[in-house]
Length: 479
Image (cartoon, rainbow, N blue to C red):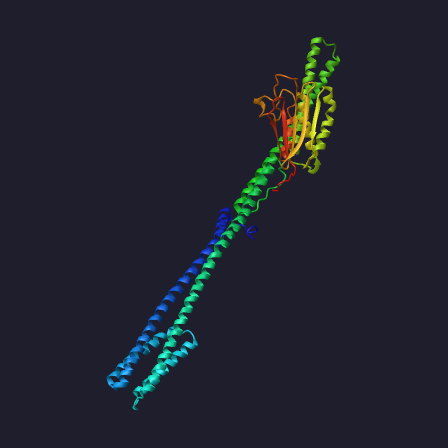
């Protein structure tokens, strides 16, 4: 739900995340607080009722003892003053019974209280009547009153004990509640935190994919960012940047096409003119003039090759972002490329040493073939006669590793950081003098980067050692 209806700003999303993460902990804290407060109230009520019942029960017992003593004296002495004392104690007894009323929680307890009141009333009527009081009958009635009153006190006390036991049970329940609230609320908060982390990472993965596509030169795919309005606005700015880069790339391509076309026309005229001079059409040439014409012809051909290489590199840079992915056996691709160079190597007495382990990857076979071809061609250029070029293929942790090693002069330390730059040609103080366009390694670097791999120059005591590392499972990240 939250992923479909994002807040208006990323800050609100973060605040919502904090609130949702804290919600289980806050609920657990509130439940714990209510449970402890309820337990405290129950404890206070239980203590109050227990002390009140004990106090009233003691008063009832003491009043009955006083009433019994006065009653026995009255039955012996028949003194009306003693009867007044009895009635005073009787009033205190009635007050104690009334105070006992709130603690009577069951029907049996209320019936016992009514029985005590009835016994006391009959005894009072017996003592207040005009007829003479029979002492044994009066004592028997009082004994029944005492017995019922004692039963009532014991019953109420047992009820209070039951309430205390129930309170202890509530305390145990509260402890159990607190015991599972913490283990449940903390993992729940962590799960919610992970959920929000997934939402936020999903938001930023859109930017990651968009920036990766821009870095690969893929300017055709529109950038759409779903999320809070401020992030969506940032995505629109990225899409504006994509359009600007696409326009600049198109302008560069048009410029190169126009420049190459404008250069080719006069260059063709120069070549034809030098050819006519070399053929002696205007007239015979002296040896010195023929030498100058040869230099002009050679450099015009070189200039034409440079123009073609420049266009090829531009096409390679644009095509790097468009891969035709398919499962392929990389060892067979390497073997076929080596076979294409066997004749050129034999003409210079150069031998190949191949150690190609079977490796299956996902990639563009044509572009990988060009990459390996450029590396092997570069190794052959700088290998001395009767030299050895090693081509190795292996794998490690989900990656394919290609090594091309020659026995040439190697790469000077001050040029190692520039060898993959377009049109860069190294200076060699030893070994064969080789002229090239300086684009072979640059094109190889573009194609390897398009496959999410990397190419590097490995330290070597003799010659140059190039290594290409490619992921076996290449998965394009969608914007």
